[in-house]
Length: 219
Image (cartoon, rainbow, N blue to C red; front, side, top):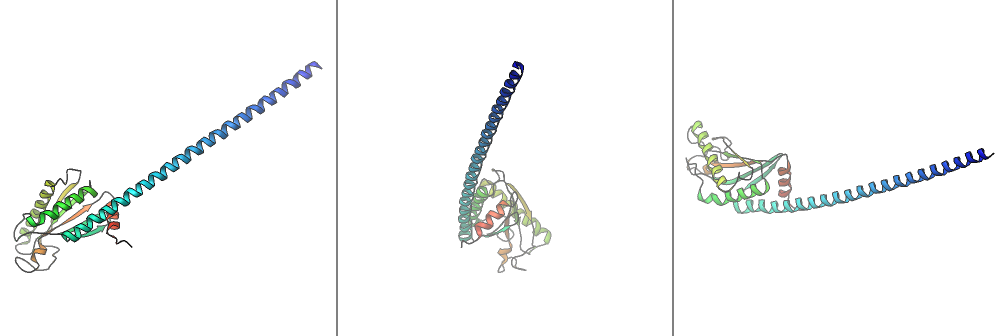
C-alpha cells in the first residue's frame, strides 16, 4: 500500500514538473517571437526612413540638375538629349576654318559643361566627337576633326574634368553628319559643321533616367 502511494506521488510530481517545464518553454518561445517581431518592425521602420531620405535626396539632385541644364540651354544654347544609357550635349562650340583651337568665346560654355559633368556624371565615360566642314579631302577633314576633339578634351582637363574618375575619349567623324549639307569655308552654315558634340555614357541607365526627368517640364 505504501509503495503504491509513493509511486502515485512520484507520478504526480513528474506531471506537475513536466507541466511547469512546458509552460516555461512556451513563455520563452512567445518572448522570443515578440522580440523577433519587434526587431523586424524596427528594421522595417529604419528601412522606410532610409528610403524616404534617399528619395528626398534624389529629388533635390534632380531639381538641381534641372536648373543646371536649363542654364546650359538658355545661356549657352545647348541641346541636351537623354539616351538609354547616357546623355548627349550639343553645344554651339565651333571652330574657325581649317583650325582646331578652342575659341575664346567658347571657353565659358566648356567650363560650365565641365562643372556639370563633374557634379552629376562623375565616373562616367565622356566622348568628345569632332566634326569638320566638307572643304578639303575626306582624309584631311578626318584628321582635323580628331584634332578638334583632342583640343577640347585638353581644355576640359584644365578645368579638372577627368580628375574625379571620368574617362575622356575623343573621336573624329570628319565631314560626316553635316548640320548644313555642303556648307564649307566661309559659306553660310559652314561654321555649324565645324563643331564638337559630347556624349556622356553613364554607369547603367541612371544618368539618362535622371536627366530625362530633369528635362521633363513640370506639370
